[in-house]
Length: 343
Image (cartoon, rainbow, N blue to C red):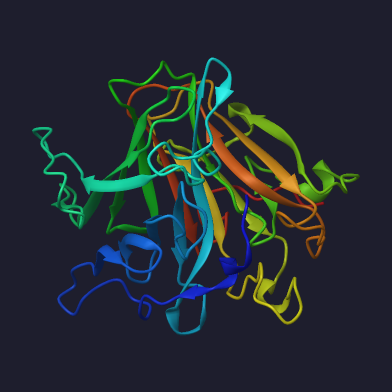
């Protein structure tokens, strides 16, 4: 991930509690601020996209992920998701490529209302398409268009959040008609260093960044490490899940840059996870992580040692493939990931 000083700033979205007095979910629908637009459920995960050349919330080309970890239920920026499609071995980078629209760094993202059952989309209702679910509850769907990449990839993301799963969003990837053939469309959670994530939770084991990279002391990205499908945990409903957490009991007690909010994680610990619902994954599914010893664009060592930075659940591209990303107060065990054997 690539983040400067704003990463420690809190964003306010009201107190905890995602239901109105009538019991209906309290949706956030296309709320605009100096960073861009946001959607979500109060008390749960709030996601957003940037606007303008220099959005207040960080680099362009990244989906923002915020969660109410701060006192009084205030939101903090926890992570980003970058879009990185691969065409003939060339990997596009939504955060780092220069836009063909305004020549600024970071590809442009913009929102439309998600197409309905008949495929229609007005392209105008940025509040998202709100629907009743057959099993009860509601969902909110937004179509996020992504500017075309230098490698010829052209994709969009259908982002859906359900009221019965307020801590997560589903991202369905689609290729636009003029896209070059895709090998992968990697959705990478790029800012694990904010929460100093050092434990990767797999099936009956946890992989520590400190053990995977015991000698790494450079100021770049440590190499990716890949874990195949046989290493990934299964959920009770037949899905696949992998999670990352900090190894610190109180990450808010640490100030990486004394006297500044730079890279400060000021809230309670959370679990971040990727999962695939039952029937939505293929045999080539795998998790990949890399790490950093120093914070991006600095030589400041990360307190406590090297931490995971990019966290990806990958599979070869197929139209409409779905990935779920979540941020939650629940522990990996509460998500259904078996704990590692006692050491």
